[in-house]
Length: 167
Length: 186
Image (cartoon, rainbow over all chains, first blue to last red; front, side, top):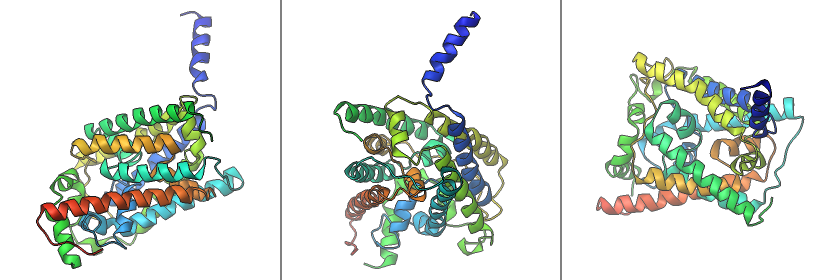
């Protein structure tokens, strides 16, 4: 390939990343380090969505929430989640320089959250449990789950955009 | 009716979930009991969470707009977020699991995160996909979003808790019924 060809190909690829890639990659590496530290220290693959059910075990006696694996891990999952909030707050103060507020409409956040709550618990994991720990474990189940939610999410997002829902 | 009863039901009626988490099954019986956690257990979890949350902030995943721009195929940068994270966790999980050692702060044996494959993996993944595509939020990113001051995300977190609660209630009732057990007061 000629030099011009390489330059054109590079430009075409960078079109896919209009905001650059550095902060994405650095953020991803930090997320990976955070997960790895918890895993190496405690032996637990820390997925973010189990927190929803393990925390519900504090207030509901339903058998699903009282499963031993949820009750046994609920305290450290609360600590993990509050630390995620705190870590993001540190980012907001140190790098972002203040708070940031979404313009995505509340009904989308609520309805989407509802489906995320159902789907991640039924599907045994989320973007971190399946996406980071499961895929990192070379788990076929996780790869299948991630491929499923990725394709459906892209389809949904494109459809919602086509319907003119914004923001 | 009692906590003991419901715990027993949960154990007996969720065979598929028991299989899905061999590592978690061991979690119930670490070498020296759950109380045998090392004093550094929680601090290490906290440090991990801080890095995780800072990373979610830096990667912009805490902003639904950025996630949606990825799902709308306008900016594919989020591939580097998941890719970067797996770049770290992949070797760590695989090497640790292969070592056969135990985690120093809990006594848990290192294991890969493996879940059994069944219809729920596909159905759940699809439902999650619709929710993610509609809102641009996933659990970890939603927690981090609160951290960057995005208070409307409380709607999203409330929705996630409600969804997780709803599916848990339905599955509890189905499980209790199929085990012929007593109804369990909530």
